[in-house]
Length: 236
Image 1 (tube, rainbow, N blue to C red):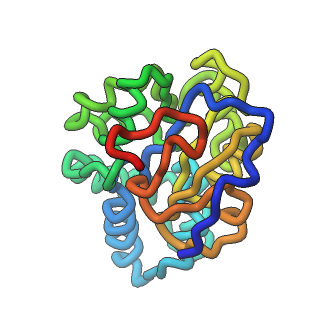
Image 2 (cartoon, rainbow, N blue to C red):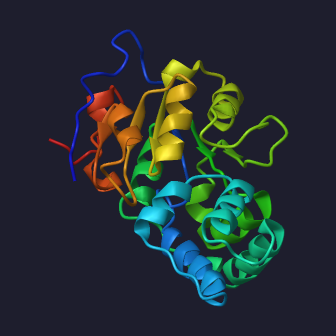
């Protein structure tokens, strides 16, 4: 995976807060999504590969469903597809584990009193299922914004959810460092005027990742001090 550095960050900006995407970045949910999607479409004799998945990762559920039904020519409506998929997801989200480095980074920033928020495309009911077994460290977030929140009129790749998160935290967008794993998410944060670190879940060569200020393979690789944030105690 190509790794870029933070040389093109805002030279006149001081990072005051951090905003994270959730799925595939903080929580390892993408395989759960993939398995549920595949189970639904397989019932109609269809399948898809990772190139197809890359087109919908990070999109709001309704848009993802509409794209899937149209592209795979499924004999059901997007609403029916979404209901079938969500039934499977709700059975499995409780098993979602944290991604490597996620808990440690969130805890470190919390100890250092750096405000944090989550900006996710996930609807509120699924969001709550995902974090049910992670309340201990998700409590470090000042705000957790869903695509269904009243201040979010449009989902990713539009900037609404990131702008709403910045507003909730009380900072200008250029003072917020965003973390994303999807092309749609990177586009969303950049459109909001934020510096972005990409941690690609799939398709690291996607053009939208080239617009990120930094691309890393894992949150474990992040060096807070390179962004003017307090370094880990064991950082050199």
